Length: 437
Image (tube, rainbow, N blue to C red; front, side, top):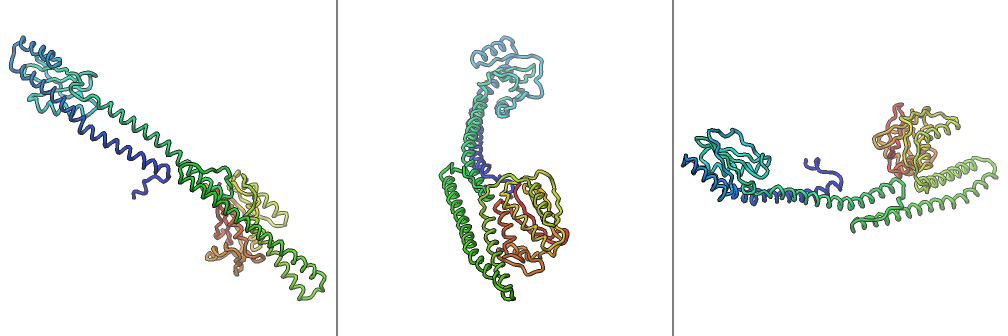
């Protein structure tokens, strides 16, 4: 259950790890100081003043002579530094005027209660430099005005202020330091995400702590290995296709001058199929390892262009744009080829094809629906495997080598998205290209 309330980002978690111990340590120090040192010192001061007040009160109770009482007031001011005056015939208030600093009130109340046998009232709020204490006598009450620093340890609030100030300062320094460290990790994550979407991020430079720099250098080395692997694969397929084209061309020329017989027609069909396979392999490599840089693409404009090109070939596609101005960062030619693959497959098996878009959170979805025979749900995963040809009535690769959906999925994943299959509302197949907006 605790995981539900913990922060999810690294920055927030590190802040908790660093700031929380500082806060707990300062809180513990404050608790120990106020409950041990400050409370003890204030209790001793308040006890001393409470004892002096109790002494003066007892002396007042023992005499009724005004001259004697006046002498007691003078002696209290001279010897105890407490201003005392007698208010005859008056009663003390019922409710104390207490400071917002509760320790002042509790400490003084406890010490006065232990030493006075009569009712008392005190005011720790009204006077900045004094504390007013009134003690009830049978014929009036005494007013005592001891200095505040003789009753309490007044450095407590200053200590708290310094403690809070140092905590804020340490926290601010920690936040700045952590932000700089986490920024390096975020740069590495952004570079990895950009590379996963087909963008090279050439300006990425490892920075930060040694471990983060090491991870950044490992990412750069991995990126270069992947790029070399893709380049080698592309060169290999291009070389194979080029080498195969020459003998295929010779075979086509040789068959062209031969008389037309069932055997030569079969050979011509085989040669055409081989030529188509070579082109399919080359297109597959070209789509996955295109050197085109990603750029901002208006999805609606791209789909309108595909619809218009299809219309020029004599086929009609319905277009439904969820909203205008949908934009993604992608390689235009690769994305257009992927959408064209889906549209061509749908047109091969269906009478009606519908191309639409919609926004799904942070993603943009390009949807191709048709009313053809579709694909059984249990065959969805198999349909994406390279060089796989389905045997059902709906064979997406009937005239190819099993790379149609593989190319579409690889193009989508190279942009940080994916392709999923579903059942179309018209009863056929629905293919959804999901890309980051």
